[in-house]
Length: 313
Image 1 (tube, one colour):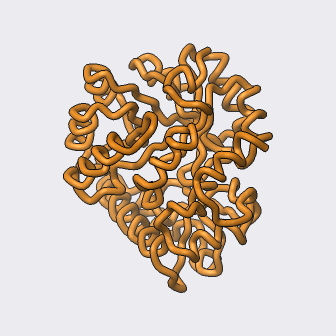
Image 2: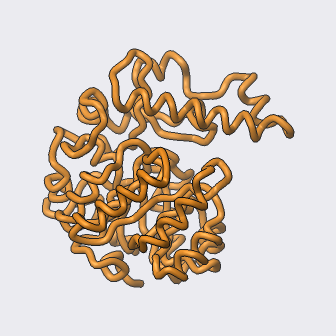
């Protein structure tokens, strides 16, 4: 099975994971200089013109490959424009999330762009493999954000054995030993996000970065109140106050045949607004997204130092 360093011309088999609101061009440029690759969500840009400017900056300043993360379901109204732009400018790879990657794979491959697909189980992994994905991003229980239901210790060997394309583990890596442990399970590489929230190149608030330093793995909880889909957040006093489960009315609307589509869209919009407000300013109503690997975050450092933590300990 080829390594991520065979798929992409990088020194270390590490993707700086795409993080909603957090990832930016400065972080990806620094990642490329440190010998890894970075990926940024297309939705971190308000419109495709801003996304175009970001891609052109990355093509000009990155010393290696970079990727764009696309939400490929109906909640992303800009999906078709974003995909067309990624193909026009020939980004190195696309990571697909939350939907069928069929159209993305078809158009991207025609443009010479690789496609890696988020999966959380074997059944979906086999589907994206059949569609022609270049690699699988195995989103496991230890991931930050929208985590999967299965631990990497079970999921990675299962996917490696059953699939013939490279498996990249998302979740469970906070230091060099954990990286080695996952590679020994047969993973072609890893996708690491939460460690880089507290980087100097990140534009999130100082309070968000300090929260990643001061809180640990035991402070990470799963909430369905942000997007309707389980999402990991830091268990701040505000999160404790509002709870992590939808109330009776929210559950009813989420299941109602006619209303659930609109309620889910509203829940997602309101949840993303909460994250946005918390990411860039300190308020009492703070919801910070992060994964259990913040256990390994001891200080705010440059991206290059965080990469060294993963590769040279």
